[in-house]
Length: 328
View: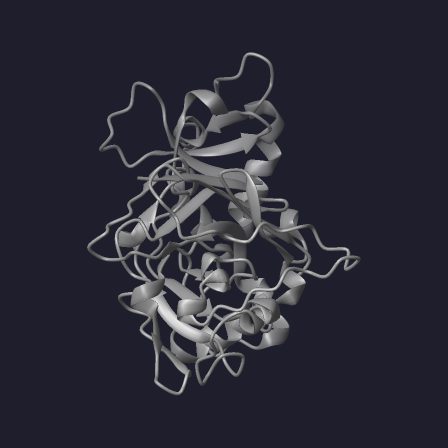
């Protein structure tokens, strides 16, 4: 299933948004479906968190009526005529930096790079939706960078979750653009080594575009077999597979669950592959090299600088969709 939150033309901007089920270019309003329920199942379809908390029972109940919701004459909305919101306002976004082999090789290495996940947190205050703007605040940064990342949406609570059963705790997957202020993040010592300030470099307004949807785990299948791409103004900057992760999705769930109880509605973002603007910035230790000819990889365009106002950023993950935002 592909789930979205959206507003129609008649909705007020302050509305919390409608829960929708997307099929191709149509969206069924699950608020209407909720009103047809005459028991506790109504809460499953009133908002995204309620549906996540409903677990497999809620998904199975909706699946029984899915075809009817899209039957000729059913009340659906055209995707092009609604405004998509972030699919969820997560309680917490747990972030794993330096989690792709190729990305680690292209940049200045901090002491823990590649040895354990770089653990930082973003909040719901950072979140915007697909087609919302990414604000480039020149007081905060001169080096605004973007990173396509697979997002794990937790569906079942757990603490100290074993790797072997970790994916049983996943509701679905989405996309987060881990927008970063590189000149706040990367600090170089005189000897050329680096340390990272992951607070000011990562946590600020509009630094977590999220969407356009959440796809349930059964439709995604193996999360370690997904193609990721980033395009800036149509130029292909990143192209890789989640199989290049150093720590798999299951291992990251285990890792974060050691610190805290994972709960429905939490989101884990899983790192980004090579090809960021940082990788071409020698001033901050970037050492990007293109994939060699004959490697079978797509040809990437090296960044000629960081993001500027007017740039269109497209974060594309196989089986999920494309998260689009413009820098302003």
